[in-house]
Every structure is written in C-alpha cells, then in structure tokens.
Length: 488
Image (cartoon, rainbow, N blue to C red; front, side):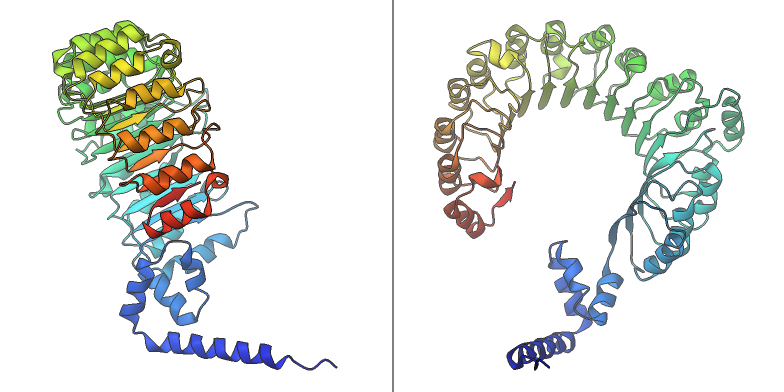
C-alpha cells in the first residue's frame, strides 16, 4: 500500500491553519468591507473559503444576476426562494429564465424573499397581469422594473408601486383574432391615476394594443421615452395628448419604428420644446424628420441616427440652419449612405463652436471624399470624442490630417479601420496629448510595436481596447503600473 506523501500532508495542514487564522482574525465588519473592494469574479472564490465567509458575503450582497439554463427543473423555484432569503439586503435582481416565468413563479419567490427590492429585471416568457398584481402587494418599494408582459394588456397593478420611476415592458405573445383588446383599456380607465414614472420603455406595440393608452394618460412626468419594434402606439389620441403635454420629456429613442416615426416627429415639432436628446435607428420618416429639423424649437444637445435609407443632405442642411440647434454637443451617424461631404461640412461650420462628440461609423462618405476629415477637424476645434469605427478603407493620411487639429480629444475610436498603420499611432501620441480612452481593435495594420509605443508614451491613457495578441510584455507591464484598463 502506497504511503501518504508527507510533504503533501504538511502543505494541506499549513493551508488549513492559514484558512483558520483568516477566518477568525478579522471581524465581520472588516471582512464585509474587504468583500466590497474585491472585483466581482472574486466573489466565487470568497464563498468557498468557509461557511462564515459565505454567510457574510451573501448577507452583504446588494446586487445579484442569475441565469437559469434549460432544462427546467420543478425544484428550481423552491431552491430560489431559499437562496434569496440568504440575501436580506438585496436591492437589485436580474434573472434570465426563459422557461420559468410564464406563471409568475420567479415573481412569487421574489415577493416572498425580497421585500426591500428596488430594481428588478426579468428576461423570461411573458408575465400575466394577475401575477404582477399579486406581486405588487409584496414589493412596493420597487423603483425600476423590466420584464415581458402578456396580452390583453392591463396596468391596474401599477397603482400599488408608489416608488416606481423606471418601467421597461416588452409585449411578446401574439394577439389572438378573437381577443377584444379594447376591453383592457376600458377596465384600466377605472383605475386611472397619475404615475410618477420618469423613464418609460415599450417594445412590440401592435395596432390593437389599446391598453397602452393607460400609460399615455397617466404618465405626465416622463423624461425619457423608448419605443422599440412598435407598429403602433395603441391609442393614437392618448399618445398625441401625451406628447403635447410632455413638458418634461428630454430624451426620445425610436428603434425599428418606421410605422409611427412620421406621427412622432410631426407631433414633436409642433409641441415639445424640452427635448434635448433624439435617437432614431433602423426606420424613420424622411419627410417627418426633415420637418422636425426645420421647425423644432427644442434645444437639442444629442443626435444619434442610424438611417441608411432615410437620411440625406437635406437633413444635414436643416440641422445646420436651425438656430435652436446651435448648442448641439453630440452628433452620431451610422451607415449614412446618402449624406455627402457638403452636408457634413455645413454642420461643421454651423456647430463648430459647441460640438464635442462626432461619430461617423461605417459611413462611406469618409472614404469617398478626400479632405473631408481635414475640413471637419479644422472646424470642430472643441471636439473631445471622435468615432470613425468600421471605415475599413480609411487611410493614415485622412486620419492624421484630422488629428492635427484635434488637440482636445480625450476619446478616440478607430475599431475595424483595417488600413491604418503604426504611423497613425505615432501622430495620436504626438498631437493628442489628452487622450484617455482609445479603441484600435481589429485595425490589422497596427501591430505589436505600434500598440506598445502608444501604451508607453501616451501620458493620459486610462483605457485601451485592442486584441490580446498585440500586447507585448512591456505594454502589459506599463498598463499594470499605471492601473490602465486593457480590454481585449
């Protein structure tokens, strides 16, 4: 019989002694403070040290993110309740459970175990209005909810959440031909009450979802509105009144909402003067947007467009001529196929005194018109953030000529610009002394030496995004010494 290795036994014994000392030497308060200062991945290791450490870690945890992969196990819900009770100070919970939430199972567990919860996000099958109503009786302190709901829509459960400020709802289940969706709006009209929502996000609204009118009638203080993949706004009359009375609306996002974009833009340009941020992706109204840019009296600060087929020079000219937009600080354009240098130069001349962020992502005008970037750099002297990502035909000369005028840059993103070389990196270091964040990932022309030169010589660099294979030992050592964040 093989004798035990004495050296191995000694190592195990010493390890146990160290663990015992660590487990008994520090008081609970000190250990909790140490736990809070550790990076998130270390939590798994902490829970394995001892039962005391695991108990302290769970009792001091305020935020959890859980994932329940298939197949579904009936004991999961009961186990979840027990697990959540070990986190008495939990205030934020995110759970992904595609097969568990259809009957409100997770909501029941949360309601029984987390009475002090403030933020809840569920990625699951749709939850019924009845489940939400029962849930609202237990977790009344919630300030943020994000989940999927089922048709027919009913929102009488919202009156119980007095602290609710942020609501994100995704409508997923199909609407049956025999469903009378107007019934939900009639029932909810009885429960009309002014809500204190400041942020509202809705996804998947269909033409017969009249129940959404409850939200339009009762959300008078919304500052941020997000609409995603919506074919309709449900009750058009209530929605129009909502926009006309939305004196506090500051941010609007439309994503894949071509069917309603024209209505929204025309109503906004007539009424809303408080808007300062507008985002429209993947489907807009060329005429409605043009009228908004020509006639709007709101003082926009941020514009973000991804409209390959709906954005052209006329919109850029209108943007440059509207005096109310002279304070615009951020302009982000993606895939702007029909915008030419003429339109961008007009914007540069008009907004050069205020614009601090410019993004031209995957815009072939950057590659098509030589000298455009040089002109923009000369006009936009206050530029602090520049994003030219995914312009794969962009050459060193164009970038270098623009950077020569951009002395105030703190953030530069060139991801996917495969034609750039180490020569561009040299100019970044020499001309952009204030650079703090740089993204040069997937720039195949920039090699190990270029990355090393940048990391070693950029005086203010705090974050760099680049492939792992391009990081030399010297670059990694320098990044570690300066507590630089390296993202691969």
